[in-house]
Length: 293
Length: 311
Image (cartoon, rainbow over all chains, first blue to last red; front, side):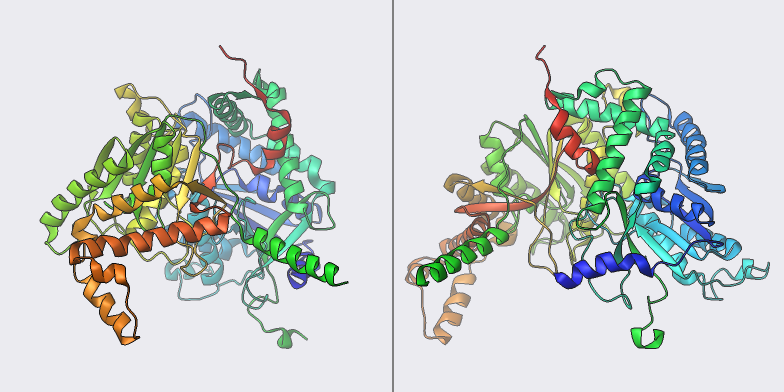
């Protein structure tokens, strides 16, 4: 138990400084922001060049809108949120959200390999496909494709056609696996850092306000969440006074409470007050410690 | 000193026992329970949910069973006959548990890896919107080392159908039939505890004698698969090799002994899990409440939600 705590806390200093680095953030849906928005803001603040890849189009996440209108609004709002975090570019693949199981794994993977080779990031962030108990399985499919792309982008025999156009293999040296903190086993290291990305926490207290503003920019998603929460509470004979009138102010407050709650959950047991948690694979991943001395 | 030592040992044992215990849950308020599983007998497999279903029904729920596959592989009668016999025995089993109906989706048994899972999910979304359950019960999609593709895939389709059925942007064609979005409040997933890391159970539901008995009778109703008249002689031979015998087994005929052995097995599991929950009998499950997907809001909701005024 003592060893596990040590690994959780000691993971943070292993991360490399982000200045001058390119980072690619792969997202299944708008949930990327609440999982990793503070850390992204921290890295862009340090000088990282960040690119967001939206694999799903978030067409389901609204209240009372058609899928087409929902997808358009969520694209614009995701771009606005990304700008607030210092992300310079947003690439939207446009696959239909909650239908990603129908998209071949290799299709998503190869598009991500293409982007990895083109942008040549030092840092890759993606949903943790090994995290369990998240009912949104798009995160599993996208995470599995991204993890595979991270691995395969370094081998010359993947994507042979674009290789002839100058896309050379590329090794991404740092990977951050993010997930919603619903998995009871999410902080178990399982093995050493040579073999398994390690649990780490990132202090986001100073970045929280920026993360919050970005999250509040996802107005269509947030309104849908608020309305569905109100509906589910009503079905159980309960009400939140905050949601008696669902307006922008109430939704913004709900988003703040949600982000504060998540950040406090992620910080629990660490020296931090507000944090995000990841599985992190850095230079020590895949290399026995004795070779790093 | 001795007293302190004794108290320390006793409290240590109690703390140790407490750490191993599943928290006991209660039946949530509601009227409709929808159970979706791949096979004819999954409502009441050994590590299953038959006792919990019986408890929901005794609590006043109407319960419906979705059998996603056609069970053609299960039994010794060949494909089409197995399907027919197993469906009939599904009816026998669910009646013992007090359930209302069986809906068979008839996907080919043990061929569910390559099926279009979004199509299965659409069927489950449709049925959730039709029956409007308060509680959805199925397999835990995160169970480790589950080897049966039917279980893996029905579980994955169901856990998505459970929440997507509440979205008006999902399969809006259903609304042409007068249906409306419906988000079921509660999800329970079952899994085995002893395959690899098994599943993480976060709740156990206590069973009484009657519910355990119904569970045992419901599984025995699947005679095509579970009735094994040769089991008595095989067990007697193994016991004799160790110089042992069980008088109850010796006194039974082959048919009764088959049910008796099934009873022992099912009763042991209910007792074993009950022991881990501090009660006589129980089944353990992974439970998601209506706000499970918003863990950051749990504390805020607990602190601020009020009882809604009755209309």
